[in-house]
Structure formats: C-alpha cells, structure tokens
Image (tube, rainbow over all chains, first blue to last red; front, side, top):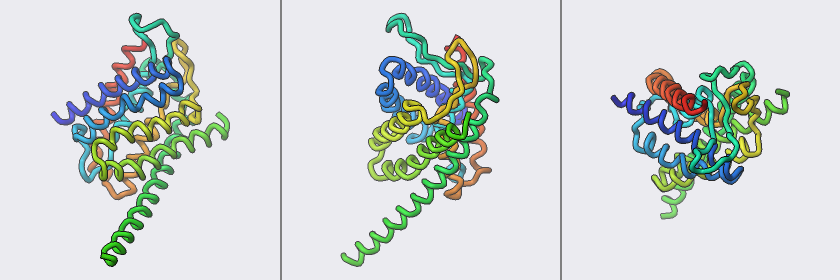
Length: 146
Length: 119
C-alpha cells in the first residue's frame, strides 16, 4: 500500500511540477522559472520526503523526488500552455518519449548529466565530510573552554 | 553537440547535487520544515536560472508539435546526484532497489499523465 501511494503521489507531483513551472516560465520568463520551485517544490518535498510517504529504505540508496519528475518529463514531455480562461499565449511544450521523441538525439546530454551528477555528488559528499570534521573540532574546543 | 556543450552540461549537472548535498540536510536538521520550504526554492530556483534559464544544459529538442529529442531536465542531475551521494555515504544499493523501482514506476506513470496533457 505504501508503494502504491508513493508511486501515485510522485506521479501527481510530477504532473503539477511540469505543467505549473513551464507555465510560469511561459508567462514571466526567467523570473517565473526562478519562482517556480518556491511554489512547487516545498509541498512536494514535504509530502514525499519530510513526511516519509515515498518508500525509501532507511539504509537504502536515496531515491529523490527529482529522479521521479525527471523521468516523467523525459517520457511525457513538458507543457507550459494556458487554458482559454487565462490567456492566449503561445504554447511552450516539448514532446516526450511516449510521443515518439528520439532518445538517441539526446544521449550525449544524458551522458554529460550522469557524469556531472556523480562528480557533483562526490564533491558534495567530500565537502560535507570537511564541514562535519570542522564542526566536531569546534565542538571539542568549545567543551574545553567551558 | 560540441565539447563546449558537453562541458557546460557537465558543470550545470554537477552544481545541483553538490549544493544540495552540502546545504539541504544540514539546514533541515537545524531549522526543520521551514528550511526545507525555503531552500528547496532557493537552491533549485537559482540553479535552474543557470541551467535552463541561461541555458547551461544543452537540449537537442524541438518545440511542440515538432519532435526531436526528449527533454532531459536538471531534475535528472538532482535525482542521480542524490542517489550517488547516498551511495558514497555508505547506503546500500540492494536495500534501495524497491524504492528505485517505485521511483521509476512513479516517473513512468507521471509521464503518462503528461503525455495525455500534451496533444
């Protein structure tokens, strides 16, 4: 049951994120894109991860909301269109693999993303260790001073 | 795609998980839900500005109704990066497999909804 709820909630959030965010980009450009995550991601993160609805094992490798929405955008496409009630801006949309988009055209980008992400994760983890060590050291000193 | 594009995509993809891994858990541990609300916006929004707003990510796509490649969002970098970071920190890949399967299923299902919306 937890898996079912996690899967459905992740799917719903990926729809909200990749329709609402592009709509903001379409309407307001860069500032809309910057504002997008403030409106979309906090509740998505809270409902999936802060309150642990998504079934991550506590000792298992972390599957993040970002992976879910990334897969959803690649397979289903993104659309920043508007309903007739809001306005008649030009449609901003990109088709996905389900529409028949050619993955091979984007394989170099995928390779760069994977390599970059792993490299960035390594840098982040090492920096995290440095900070943790520095914090432990300053705590020791604080205890001695007290 | 030239090597310039590869390099910019690489740099943009590296920035997101690096900043998230350093900052996010630390801030949430100290300030709780409020930090999560604020910094999911600040970190992802600001990196978005570089990656998709300015266009560090090279996307070989065509706008609908034309079709070329699918859209690879910087969410891929975040998802893969956080997965890799947890592995670097000693989390088990095997124990995480059910969650990984659920995540992929969730993405495929969400993609189906998006597919239905883009016609």
